[in-house]
Image (cartoon, rainbow over all chains, first blue to last red; front, side):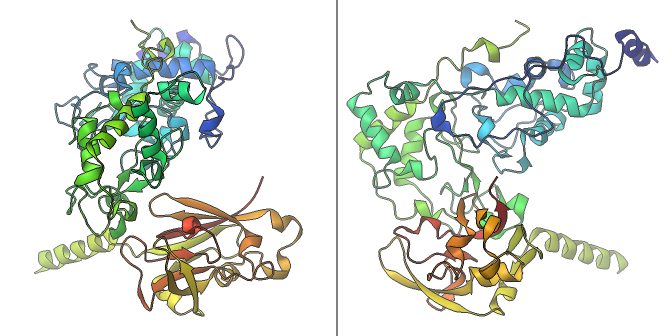
Length: 337
Length: 160
């Protein structure tokens, strides 16, 4: 009854107050390519992105009103939380490491195991999982509907101030698609604005050259991301089946997403289970500790070991991928502060 | 006894759900969408081709030619591959997310003498772990980057 009254006072309907939402223009370097993913039924708009940003930082979307998406995806850590496993509303640690949210516009299947096709599907899980934000989307919609600010923001974004599950995940997805990191020191080098040190240059060569460390085989191109899932030799018998749990295929045992390396120096600890605390440990793993198994990526078999200097050079390159403007960009920051 | 039977049946169905048979699907601009299993592929006409692998050596791969599979799915091949059909392509998807693309004409025997196959055997035995059960084998290319491992899908589309 209260809800109905509020809805009436707020004036339901599909009339835009200030005209239809304005298209939001995403900008990124041409070397990222245009194989981006924006569903036809959820184009980016200024109003949708603005609303999505507020929802991203909105604790009312969690049971108990204590955490938001940003609790596990902090901007200063390139939208990770620095923890091996994140803690949800019930105090239970998540089974996997919180992933960085950068350049999601190019990602098609989300999570470490790629189980969610599209950001809209992805968003449902952390919002409703009892060990994460722990609140049904219908409850979130009800809570927002009763807020003095949200009905008007939903109307501006979607043409009606009736708040639904679907509009919540759509707005969140719109905001997350704008989280583009393309101004790292490496980007400045690609634009001819930065001269790398000898060590960094050697790191670049080692990374991308198939005859070097060959990291670029999977972390391909300047985005340092390809939509791939590999068993990267962490364990001979994987404790976590990874993608196999989704596909049911034995050949997917221990396979996980090949994550973006953008801002990697900010997103420790590393791997799906956060087992490595430093980039040096990661370099040691790929050089010296690959574990053989039936599903090990063929590209990681019989690898040449790296020297100490080569490992240092690789890590020097990885530090070039830090984008200080991304982690301080006000468009991505907490709007309630 | 009844309880045991129910538990047994439950276990069996769970097992059925979790262990899925690997297969190749052919979808998109097809008249007969296909889901080919290893058993299905073994009953089709077999062809052997040689491919120089990353080790620099030639190896013999056996399987079914791609035109054979595309014909079965009702893809426009041979005499039908003309006009706007020449703007069609085949997107190959693999289990690890790897994707490669061919224009249909690249694979068609009326355009090319090379024979690309979907292989399920290497030197008369099964494909090695990590590459099977199905590998696309495209002879005559300078590097084997399109001879993709663990192929799961052929998607036929018009270029737009």
